[in-house]
Every structure is written in C-alpha cells, then in structure tokens.
Length: 347
Image (cartoon, rainbow, N blue to C red):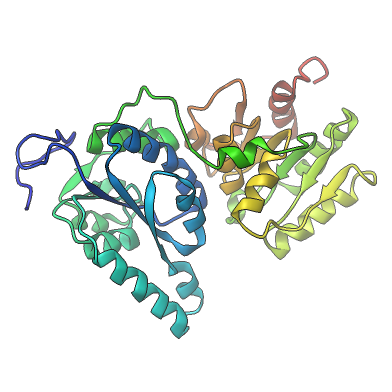
C-alpha cells in the first residue's frame, strides 16, 4: 500500500500506517564511526517495537559492526568499497548481486536511510517498500539528488550530530524515546573481560591527511605520559601510520611505548581498544569505538573538523579539543587528558 498524506514525525496507527511497523530496512553503508553512532538508534527502535524485524544494508567492510547488535536480524554486506578498488573483479560483482537479490527478496514496511547520499539512496530504491525516508536535499552530504529517492524528508537540526542526531531522526520516523539512556550494545561481555587497562592508546591514524595531528605533538604527549609513569600503546592501519608509530616509539625510552600489530578483525579491535586506560584519538573510527565503550576519551580535532560528532557525551569521561577553525596544541590536549586521568594537579 502506498502511503499518501504522511508527514514527519510519523504517527503509527493513523491514516494508512499500520498500528506497528513489522519490518525495517536500515541503510547506513559507511563509515566506521557512523556505523557505531547508529547503534544507539537501533537500540531505541528495538525498545519501542520489540517485534520489529530490523535488517541493515552496509558496506561489507563494516558488516561486523551491524552484526554486533542483537536486534539486527539480517545484514546485507555489500562489497562497494572493494569494487571501487577492483572494478573488474568478477567475484565481487557476483557477491554484490547475491546480496542485492537477497535484499530484493524481502518486503519492508519502511526503509530508513540516515546516511542519505547517492550510493545509499540507490540501495533504498532497490528495496521493496512503499515508504522510504531520508534527509532533505540540503542535508544529503553535498549530494542533493539523493533526496529524490525518499517519499519523506527529514530536516537535520543543525545543533544535533553524531549519535544524538541519529537518535532524533529515529524518533521522528519510529516514535522512539530520546529519554532512554544511550545503549550501543557493542559486545558487552567481550569488553567486560578486558584485562589490563594500564596504557593509554594514542589513536594517531586517520583516513584523511587534513585531519591529522602533527607527529611532534604525538611525541610530546607520549613523553608527558611517560613522565607520569603511564605507558603508551600504538598500532596502525597503513604504511604511513606505521612509520609514524615507529617514529613516536623511537623518540621515547625503551619500553615506554608498546607497538602492536594491526588488529585482524573486529573482535580483536574491540579488545584492543577496550584494554586501554584511556584513548586519545582523531576524527576516526577508533575514537567513536572508544566513546561507545565509555572509555576515558580525548578527542583531538583539526581546524577543518569539529567535535560536535562526539557530543553530547559524558563530560566526566570525554574531552574534546580543537576543531571549528582551531588546531589544538599539546598543552591544550595535555590539560584535557590530565583531567581524564586524574592528573590535574600535576598538569
């Protein structure tokens, strides 16, 4: 049935809408941090509609995150980034077609796209549903044509970003309760077993160079932690990041910095982050995971980015410096990290 005359917020049980939605396709393809920040909205939806069947379409790189949420029934892992890198790989095309056929085999009462860019809107169009909801053209990440895929359009409140923004969008579409505590539901049992938590993780890597923090700043921050008797650990995800990690370690006394090989999968990554006394990170997936795991977190943002993607978070365990036209220096970062570690008197 086509739904005419509807507007956000949706009132389930009125007009042409059923009393309760029975099936939902969530389309959030990328990136890692966005996947993490979508999890609390899924928790809200599952709490409001316990019988709702929730499926999730996602880039195959991040499918393990979607599968972590116990309310998600099926994950459609689309190898989109892999095909971008290897467009002639027949196996990838066959895998994509198989996932899309499986997606097309289901009917959904609602398709919800909190990403709302061209690639996600195309997935929405392929889904069999009478109702697709996404952002209005002005909020479609610089790709306003994506809005044509949706029957209903949500205006992103300018003051809401990240986790809270997605929760507010879900509330408009699925009548969820924003007063609920934030629940990421991210491998609680696994994280409870994290044994050490003595070293600070410096998550220095980021996918875009304009979001980096100077190597000299990372070295100085590591030196100050060492002076307080606090160890540091580093890992990497690329050759560029490995060179930086080894340069930071080489600038400190032996044993002050522990270099770790890149985690092989999501389970290892979660264990690695969870096994940290605190995390210092840029605008990257490591930082969003640390926020989801409720670890003491210092977010370091370059002038070209902004801390709003992490806010509002618990000020007792989260501190952000820089962003919105300002590049933070080491002193600013150290003051924030000192407070999180209980070192304010020595800072």
